[in-house]
Image (cartoon, rainbow, N blue to C red; front, side, top):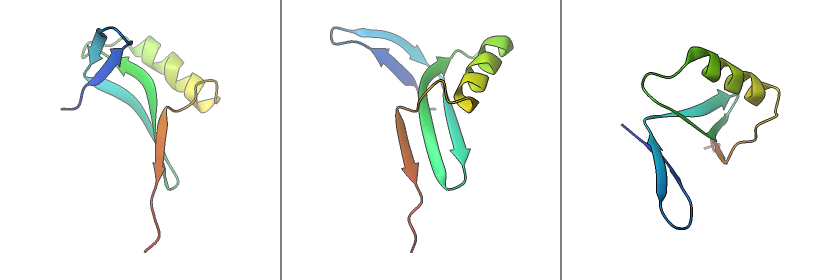
Length: 67
């Protein structure tokens, strides 16, 4: 299981077991939002809506390459 680590220059602040990712067309994007195992559905829903409205930008993304 991958864990998202929230950190600053001095120390690790929090580790989350779930990250918010998006697959659309040929692109995979990761967002800087992590959730606990017992996450609140309404918090997840609000965050997803912000991503879909492009109010939250991805911190990394990748695209499939053509062979």
